[in-house]
Length: 213
Image (cartoon, rainbow, N blue to C red):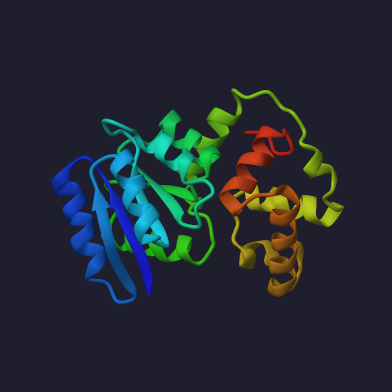
């Protein structure tokens, strides 16, 4: 059972998400909140697996709340109404595992919860890659020391992760077994100190290893 906490300052939107997700097999909504401050208090008590976090809220916005949850084991999916929103990129840097547009189909929201709960990053849509590329472009390229510890193969794996490829797609692209790719991905995340693929992608852009096309 995957437990979920919903954060949105619009009651109608929040209640709609709660009703939709709570009706799904394998998902249980354990709580909800209307702002970041309230959410942090409740999340600390309830320890959900996944948090759906609105970006723009009063009191404490989703960006600050996501930063404060960085050391919490829950995975954060940022919710936004904007295709290119600078706050979303900052949320990814702050520890979010991905982001989703509020007008996405219900099936996509449900899939997002399962994907993130399983340790993957919700970064496949092309719009997400455009967003990361756009705001990474504004940052200075400083190659982290952790990048130097990667082997040639691990560096290539990181490049493929940054393209938004899944393990199956990377295996096909590089002619490797899927299990081998999984092992390499795990080693890359460990060496980078990244909690998931989303953080690895951010690091790859910030370091200049991958440059926006």
